[in-house]
Structures are given as structure tokens and as C-alpha cells.
Length: 166
Image (cartoon, rainbow, N blue to C red; front, side):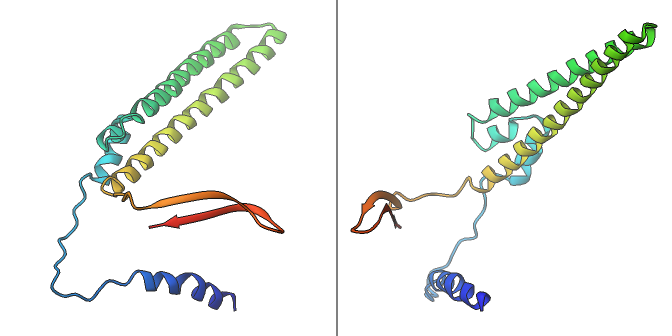
């Protein structure tokens, strides 16, 4: 019963709105994308922010580049801290100092691994963002579309009235 309700409520109106006129005299030109989504991904993975620059989202490029540089710098710093603590741990004979160095070493290793994960996450988000922007590059929004949100006050209820015009 729910399936029938969803079918009638969502799918039927969409299928009615999506029909095209059957005028055989107009011939459509095949659509070609201006920006390549694959090229955007490859550029974004090769150098963070390059994919955003390619799809002309210039303000996003320094954000991805800066975030990646920050995380990579912290990976290197934490790795250096880890190796320093490891050397000190190996040369120390005091058991109390060894326990402190062990905790510091483990903390540096955990921080290094966390920043490495964030680096991969930023690379992935940057690639997905560039891919999406390349797909939507040719998408146009007409000026006829309008969304109006007005307060509504009835006799028994208060709320907002949403009006969408295409």
C-alpha cells in the first residue's frame, strides 16, 4: 500500500512533467560538456586545488591547497617528533623517563596517523568537489526561478509560506 502511495504521489507527477512535445521538426544537437569530469579528478589528485582551478572555482583552490599543505606539514612534524622520541627511548635507561617517552612517542604516532588520514580525506573531498563542479559547469539557472518565504499567521496557526515559481 505504501509503495502504491509513493508511486502515485512522487513518480506520476514527475512523469507527467517530464514529457517532451512530440514535434518532429526540431532537431536537438548532441550535448557536449565544456569541462571534463575525469580531467578535473586527475588534476585535483595530482595537485590539490588544480581541479577547482580547472572548473573555474577559483576561490576553492587555495582552500584545498592550504588544507592539504597544513596536514602534510603536520604529518612531517609529528613523524619527526616520533623518531626523536624513539631515539631518546632507545638510549634512556631510566624507567620513569622511558614511560614518559613511550607515551609521548605513542602520542606523536597517533597524531601523525590522524593527520595522514585528514590528508587523504581532503584529497578525496577535493576530487569529488572538482568532479561535481565539472559536471555542473554547463548547468544554467534561469532568472525566472524564484523562491519566496513569507511568514504566515492564520486564525489557529502560525508558520511560514513557501512559494516556488519556475
